[in-house]
Amino acid sequence: MPVAELSPNAALVVLDVQEGILGLPLRPHPAAQVVDNSARLAHAFRAAGMPVVLVNVAHGPDGGAALQPRADVPHNPPALHPEYSRLSPELAAHPDDLLITKRQWGAFTGTELDIQMRRRGIEELVLTGVATNLAVESTARSAYEHGYHVVVAEDATSTFSAEHQEFATTRILPLIARVDTTDAVLAALGAVRA
Image 1 (cartoon, rainbow, N blue to C red):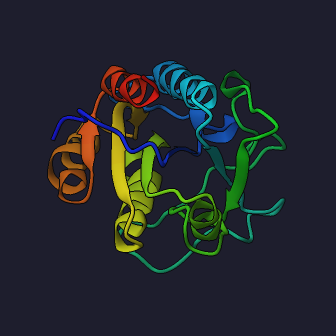
Image 2 (cartoon, one colour):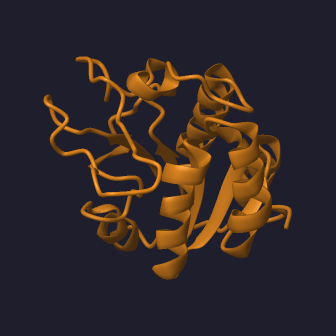
């Protein structure tokens, strides 16, 4: 469903737009587009006086905090380098932004995201980031289960294959969120500010 309106009690949540992930081959949207659209949204939310949450994932210096359960398709985290968890500088983190570090795909489990959103009276989350079918989808599912309205800016997300992106954004996310473009979210945000 298109995003015609946005709650005045919305927050932007940018997921894993960080150096160690942006260097991976992303599809269908290149990393530069995800960063640019996420930064545009962050700037607009800040200008509207609405919260911006910047989330990164960190596995510790030795990778020991990475998820390693048995699975049919093993998840092997990339080799860690010192800047792996550093947020993209293009996001231009602001002192008022809420910074959350997570240890798994979703941004709710094991973090203070929910309590910080509730303290601010937030009822709707706009999600961007990488990877669409992992961090974004996991966070959207948890947000939905916690009672938040969810919006996903599709062209501010990407993953590791076009097929995974299409499945997540046309089959899974529409069951729990509204999926639209960055420009549509910006237009809805402009209507909130008017």
